[in-house]
Image (cartoon, rainbow, N blue to C red):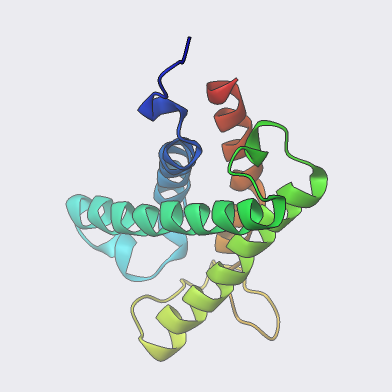
Length: 148
């Protein structure tokens, strides 16, 4: 008997959903560390955080696909090795460093408040980096629980 694949069994969908949920919370909590958002309206902050969270979910999908390419399987997330988790995290960190530099320096889309600690030389905010060190392993954990 052939079993039908359910949409909820698609690894990328689960990565996107759990990444979105975790990152939205993070984005909301780090509002005080950015300049314009704390002084804007509540709704403007929600919209800005939602847009950033869609970007975070996209980064998670890209990181997932990078690991899938190395693992030659989209199901790597069910039993990830430490190396695969490391790739997943590092892809997110590298993309975040690039996006933060583009957004804060080149495009002037946002700026950090004085309370945001930054990395020496790079100038990237510490909290966006911590976001991509702490949340991807949690995303993997939730996705594994969902798919097994």
